[in-house]
Amino acid sequence: MKRSAVKELIERYFYQLQRGCGNPKCSNQNCASSGQVAPMNPNEIAARAIQLFSQDAKLCDFYSQPPKVPRTQNDSPSR
Image (cartoon, rainbow, N blue to C red; front, side, top):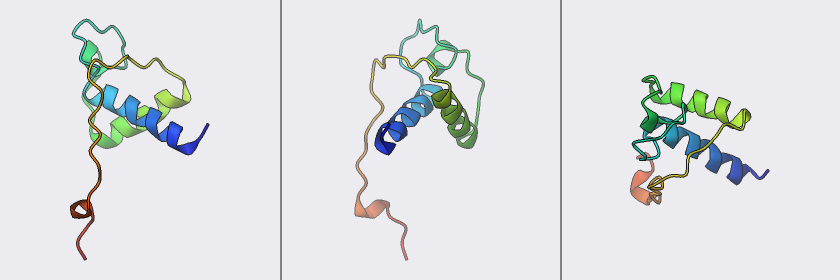
């Protein structure tokens, strides 16, 4: 699997854990929309997302796709 595909899948797990799929009736225990995900900080979410990727865990079909915000020159740290 290409690195970009792996990165995209891990980002989807992260988003799913952090914000959910948007389905109020979601039954996926690894989705924030289900109400079954314990509160975690971003580092814990990232670690869990990698773990879910390695287990090939179920991903929800997102009702609303995670926002893709292009990086701009303003996003880079100032020197």
